[in-house]
Length: 298
Ligand SMILES: [Zn+2]
Image (tube, rainbow, N blue to C red; front, top):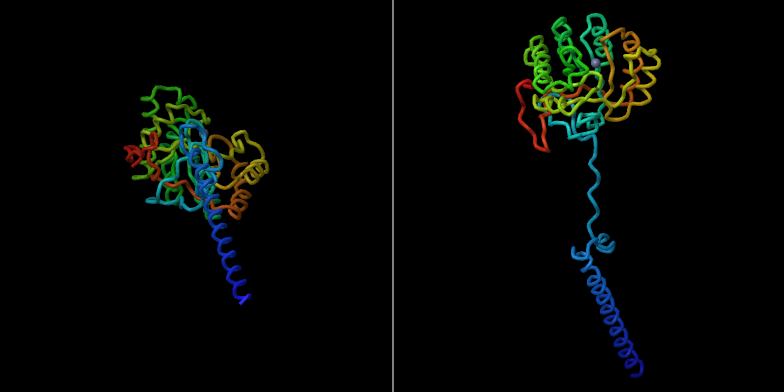
């Protein structure tokens, strides 16, 4: 009897303790909620940290590497404003892009093309209009090999960006027309300002025509004719994922650049995916809105 009574008393005490404990927990939660609530109200200004901690974790940063780069019909590259006046400084993906400026050149462009073919690498050629007109066969060879085109102005005009917009537009269209006279239907989706002398108007006109302004990430200054070893060492040591590499296959003696390719192509080929910047799929944009493809881009 005593045992039974003692057991009943113990059960009552235990349940009272549990109820009390539960009430206590609820009360504590209510207190926490009531103290957090005012901090979420905008009237007092900056929310307190306790409210921020209650929010779901922030979304992970966007991952590079999910978007393919090369080939017509692929989605456009993501927006990137790393270069001067909103020009593109990287590929926007892990892919590394080799670019060759100032050609085509009858002696040196075929050598660059042969090495690119040997290593199975596609690149982008920034062509000068007068050279396109003089050597249309080389322009066709560039296209046949699967490389892509970039406009480098009609006569390598370093001051083009300072000219009136109508003059800039005429120069860029003339160069694109020359490329398309050599390769009917060719897409010229990029413009690179000679000397890197970008201005807001030249970037704007390129965009209106449908070309993305193409700056660069890695510049070994091969036009200053450093040794092949120096060019290769700069490129091989400075290149990171997404880099656009500036080289020249014309505009002077480029033997050092050609020789450096024998090191650059296998070195980067082991470490990165190398590819041409994609043709004709990066529509002009203004204030975040995509514009339709324009005459001159096709
Ligand atoms: Zn140039």
